[in-house]
Image (cartoon, one colour):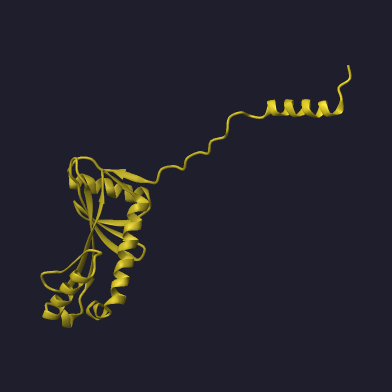
Length: 178
C-alpha cells in the first residue's frame, strides 16, 4: 500500500504533535525580597535583629544604644528605633536631625517656624531639642511583624524627598538650618 503525499504530510504532523511536551514550562517566581521578622514586644531584641539584618544586607549603620540604630543611607542619616507590640501594628520611629543656625537657637522665630512646618507638611512631626540647637523630623514606618528591605528603602527615600520638597516650598527653613 502506497501512502499518498497529502496523507504523508498529515501523518508527519500527527507524529510531531505527539512529540511536543504537553505541560507548559512554569516560570520560577522571583525570590522574596530580603526581610526580617520581629515577634514579641522587646524593643532591644528587635534592635539586635534589625542590626543583624542591616549587616547581612550591607547597610551602613552603627548602634547608638540598646534600642537605637543610626542608619547611613543614600547620603542621609536616620535614627531608627523599633516599637514592637504583640498582636498589633509595629513601627520604626525614624528621626532625622539638623543643626539650627546659632542666631535662631532657642528663639521665638525658630519655635514659630517649627509650628508652621507642623501645620503645613505631613512627612512627619517637627520639633526642637530642649536647647533649641537641633531640629528633629520624626516619622513612622509601620509594619506587621516583618520589615521588608525594599519597602524600608522606599520609605527612607520618600522621607528625604519630602524634606527636599519642603525646603523648596518654604525656603526660609534653609536659612534656619546649619
